[in-house]
Length: 58
Image (cartoon, rainbow, N blue to C red; front, top):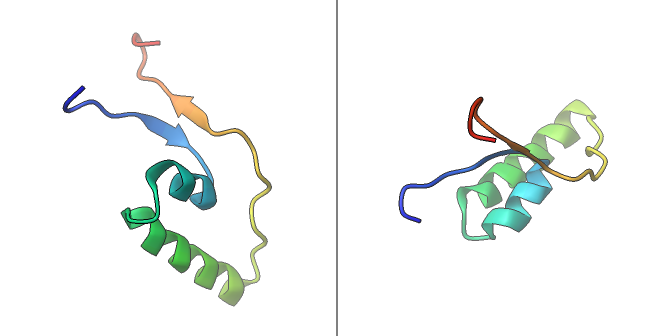
């Protein structure tokens, strides 16, 4: 369906899995890993991603 979109809460790693390695998520994931390393932030535990709906649509 042209022009359709979805919103979901997902870890950066899940976003890369969903969007593929040729997407902007690839560059963003590299930045996340660099920031985690610099700031000492652990990787988020894997969880199912959550699809967000607009009120009245789901």
